[in-house]
Image 1 (tube, rainbow, N blue to C red):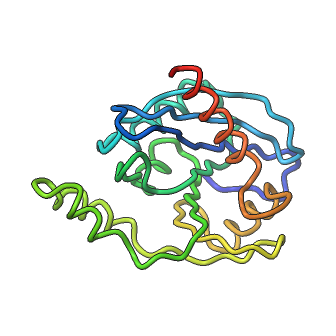
Image 2 (cartoon, rainbow, N blue to C red):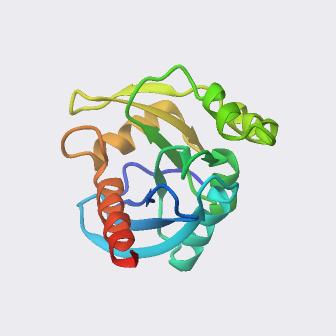
Length: 190
């Protein structure tokens, strides 16, 4: 699927999660937002803390929306819920939609942390982490810098999408609202 940035009213599915240490599952929230910042869909799901189901969980969230008008998926992070790693390419392929996973800080990597948290089963997690590849730094129109891993679109298109959906700061509005929804659902669930 190609991303048509010149189309008025493109839609992004913003995905974020919320969890508390000691819980077995996190709340996954998805918000469909048009490029004019109108919200026209929400969904909730879950993903296992420390598990391997992040990609499957986001695909399930996407499918539960029953939408064929989502142009791009924006995920807050490629590593959710204590090392539950998103397969960015598989997520794009399974949804038929370009995907951008974004983070907000420059880091040197998490291989050491994976080894510490998973002394018995680190190899599978390390392999999934290495498949993610390097993040690309993107300077947004707001002047803030983010780091992205993407599939189904090139770097120029990713920047255009992020600029279109970021009003201020570094967090695109669909992701920001998804974070708020995930936190509220987590608080309600508790």
